Amino acid sequence: MRICVVGAGAIGGLVGAQLAHAGESVTLVDIGAQLAALRRDGLTVIAPHGETRVVRGLACTDSFEEAGEQDLVLLAVKAQRIAEVAEPMRALLGPETAVVTLQNGLPWWYFHRHGGEMDGWRLESLDPDGRIERHLEPGRILGCVAYPAAALERPGVIRHLYGDRFPVGEPNGEPSGRARAVAELFVRAGFRSAVLDDVRAELWLKAVGAVAFNPISALARATMAGICRHPATRALAVELMAEAESVAARLGVTLRVPVARRLSGAEKVGEHKTSMLQDVEAGRSLEVEAILGSVIEVGRRLGVATPRLDTIYACCRLLDESLAAQRAARNRGRGGYSELSSESSS
Image (cartoon, rainbow, N blue to C red; front, side, top):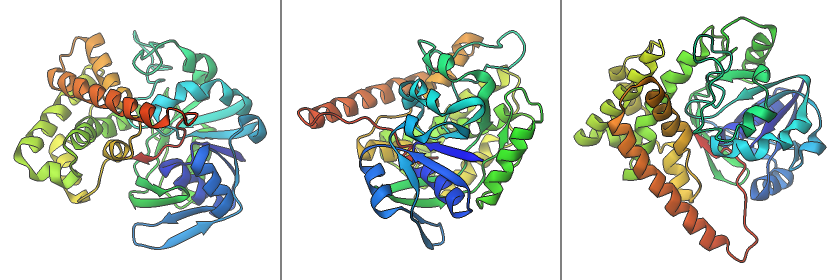
């Protein structure tokens, strides 16, 4: 199987390194300092228990055309970057190429092959002009929930913090040979994976935690444990998760883990910085629409009020715009820079 990982940051790089170490045929697509480091030094992965593995001789490029047609594409860029890579990614796609999505929050394809009255509804917060939908056909998509947390410590060096699960599933819930093949691929690479008959419920399970912990951590500069220890932010996290859970329930989704257990689990993670806080500290763009905007959009469509999520969303949008202005000021006169890597996930 020819496999291409688009975005070799924290999660994409972690998966790509493990697949290459397991002997799979992998090509990594990235740009800038990350690509230079991959070519020069290979990819270093620091495991949760401290073991360090260096994978050298990786096939890597900044050209989709050079990578060529693939059997499987693992799309690991941040959600806000997908629109800009969707059209050039066509060079990777043959008639049977599957695309596995590895983003935080709800995916742009959520209502494709959904069934019922909302089937085919496009999430405008994620794909406002339909560009992604036009270039990445719904039939190619295989859902996946990326549970590991990782961080790009510096170009070419990824620290795997915790987690090893990548459950997958067809958007329409049907079993398929390609879903089984991808799950087996993750297992061969040293992860845990299973084929789900309702991958959307699993996406919601992670998303409900993300709408609370990511924004609060970004705005308060707090770790997961810090949020849980502070009574006010702990209570706010519960309220945000409850609003998101109400939206999921209106769609008929029942979460298999209650909010109280999610809170307890987050506290046990310890002094971990969420992906959004990592992005704030690095001055990168934030996954505001994927983590917050998509949930709010679905809530409005279904008539579910989300006042606390709306407030947090407004604050995060302003923060994201401020970071963008700072990046523009830094890049002025330097030719600019376009992000590609999925730098972190949790």
